[in-house]
Length: 617
Ligand code: ADP
Ligand code: MG
Image 1: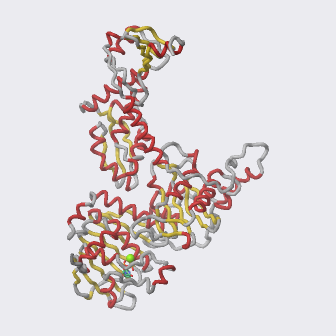
Image 2: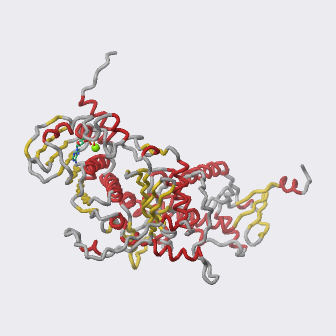
Image 3: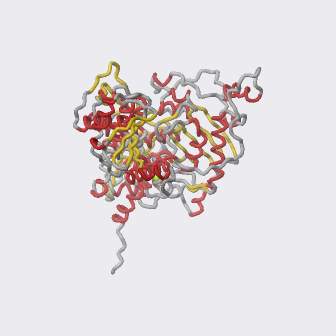
């Protein structure tokens, strides 16, 4: 076989897939370039989820006319000169492959102007270079990427729906706004402004992304422990979220996903969290670059620490000290700066709505006041903050809740399969022998006895009826007097939007409402008594692909609950007629389980009873 040296064009097409696989990764690379160029204002515009257009404009340093062409060449970078620089690199990008890769698979154009020079532009289509031409433009750079993957149809096919791609870009933008609160970002999707930040600090950025209310539900942290700096915001004990999409971690300025930190925070919340609730946090970890390896993969938000235990221990002890309010908490809460006396000129572009004062997170001063109780309890009153955990570096094995959940599901499924022995007995052959504790009905047939849980049996029957109605689509929608509005973040909204059809099929009347909310104006009549807030919290908890619970499963669960409420309870005496009706309706199916998975009937053989009496061994 002959070895061919790939042409640059082919090579770049292959390499492109590693750096850019989706519109959001194009946005990521180009915004990082703008940040590296020292921009203070960055505008990101996308169309059709970024498939047809991604345009990033910045007011950074610009590119010299003579460098414009090199910017498109692979391994061309202004950020590294020699191998030694690799160890001190401060910029976000340094491989010099993003622009070359993107230009190989799109129609790309860069227009740029340095302060000293004129504006020039260069277009590259599918890797084919045009000419550097004069252009108009302000200081800075505008990079446009049109028709991503137009020349690689296979890759085009892997893109998700416009809404899904847009939601991933939005997420990316949220992370940029939070990690660079000193930069003013404007993010526009299909002509609509989705986010605009003002570059005036983290609190402002946080309230733009999550709403001003969120701040008042947070503690602000600024801690320095074992040479590890941790700052940012964590939700208070009652402010939890239905999924992990409200968690952001930045290590040395970079957004990362990291199991160790996420487990440390989650475990610190421990008992404060209800089942299937997740803490809210936006945390920044500054650590010496020697103990962190961010260079795992150019496109992965992954990070490795040289010493996971130190990281786990530090994060855990800081977060739990603050939540439990022990005396060390003071060291970790951010001190509120004294308010500036002179009136500050307001930035001219700031719209009215953003000028309302932001509610402050639990301040250092406030916390200090509350913590005095801890130090010197007044008049025997119960201290509000009690030191519940020892302050030593506690290292629990981080066990992500997701894994346990999946594990349990698998186990239960296996159990259920094992026990699903179909045992159908003609009800006429079941001889009713009476009831025990007003809960268990006793039947005899041949040399077996059956104990039937009347509640479980009834529940199952109601559930079956409801399910049948749903399956036959015989659903009646019950209009609500006051519509219920579900507010969602971009990820959640994309999920709901995708499932609107399913919700409608089962009798909900739902429609999009504003930018990222869903309005519910009718509910299926069988579920009219459900708690909508709890229901949607549960629906949204399946946003993460990790836990791909189907919406129909959640609904099944709801059905089970309403069946449970309607069914006769244990302890209620049934008339003989009711007993007969009940068992007839079961059609003698003794293998049934209630909708929660508990058995409806338990069988005991004559021989088992004889063993108890030692008649046989
Ligand atoms: P890298 O960022 O790894 O250096 P890129 O392919 O992303 O590689 O960019 C190549 C070079 O183009 C950069 O090193 C930088 O000199 C220049 N460049 C790209 N985008 C911008 C921008 N927005 N402003 C100024 N220079 C830029
Ligand atoms: Mg770059």
